[in-house]
Length: 266
Length: 100
Image 1 (cartoon, rainbow over the protein chains, first blue to last red):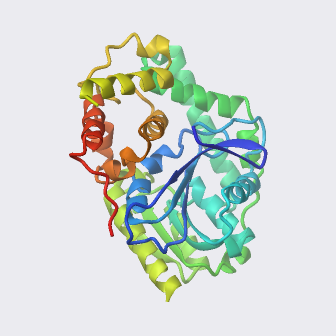
Image 2 (tube, each protein chain N blue to C red):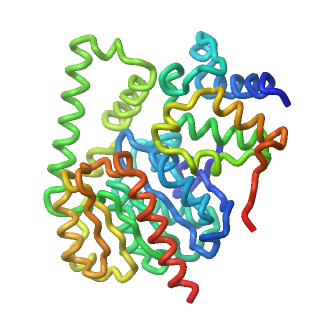
């Protein structure tokens, strides 16, 4: 299994190589997934292979504590995710700018990485991106309560015992992360990325949100902070844009990367 | 290489990924669905594709194979779909192409 030790943590990494020439001049495209039960497979099943097939070099990785990456007890602040990403790119020998595609929490990591290391970012694609605003800690706490209530209810009713292998394993993983690491405490302690810092981002930004998303307010805030951001709100979609509107999203991402690549080589 | 040989390879890799105790309790054949029958986790499917790519080297192109499929098509795939694709790559009727 392809693994890279970055920032002291063993990360599961997949590099998909270009097969076609359409985007061979594209800078590498790095996909960052969401939190909790998410991992790189949500991209592997949707956007990663089409982008690689179009010719861009694709990097997929599981965040620490997720998927097949190591699950250390600590290090779940956004700053840790940013440091992990920087170390991962170093370890892979990628020193030039990359396109970052961030889904949900991955959007926070992408935005924070761009704020910290602007020279390493060619563009950002933000899908249903959270970003750390006031009230983030409360949202994290509410999410934890929601998951714990659901799991406890399922356990009491005996329903949990009826579940198949896949769900049982996912719940066990979530339990490990939530109850045996500093994951939630770290997330709750995260300070908001100041709007003043967001406004200084100069890299091209493409953002996609679902019309009925619970984080649709972020789309408006992002639009207000980043006037050059190209924003699309997909009608009829909720937060799961990646899964519910894969084809539309794939076209948006491929079109964006083609445009950015054409602009970059001029 | 025949489909039977490829099936044996895929079965062996699935046993390695899912654990012998679980995988051997199932009769993994061409009709076995990854999601509905095996309950393979999506991250395990990524592992499967990596291990197959390593096993068959560059004779198969999983990126190209999956790029044409939508999410539901991937989720609904059977062991036979993957075995058939690999067998066709190996016997040259489904060449791995690189655009000029």
